[in-house]
Amino acid sequence: QVQLVESGGGLVQAGGSLRLSCAASGGTFRSYAMGWFRQAPGKEREFVAVITWNGGRTYYADSMKGRFTISRDNAKNTVYLQMNSLKPEDTAVYFCAAHKSGYPSDYESRSPVGYYYWGQGTQVTVSS
Image (cartoon, helix red, strand yellow):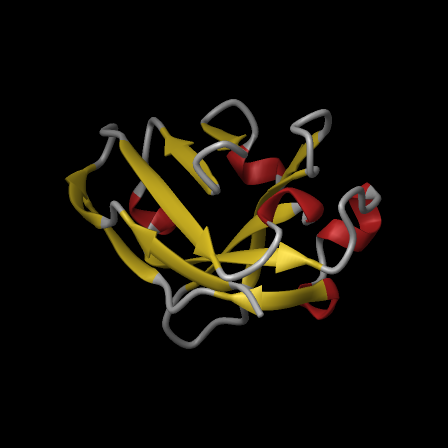
């Protein structure tokens, strides 16, 4: 059983930056690919980015490419999401999740179905 705890959310102006962290405990962190999803009020949970177990591959949603960067530190059991050039439409609760595979394909990564463990989420609000 893996427990995931996100942090780093908050209120930021449009154009600003935030760095989210997700700390894992209770399992073998390095076994899992780690993803970030987000969910805005009234909308479905949306894929943001994923990183494979060793950091060798990353995939991003098109609207985040070039603005968001996912990374991980297996020694610290932590995955990060650096978010730059934030827009009001980035406002959402951001969740980290551990995928059942350490090396999912791009296609497999984008569905919430493949993720075994989820954090409780952290709120990101971007003001215009």
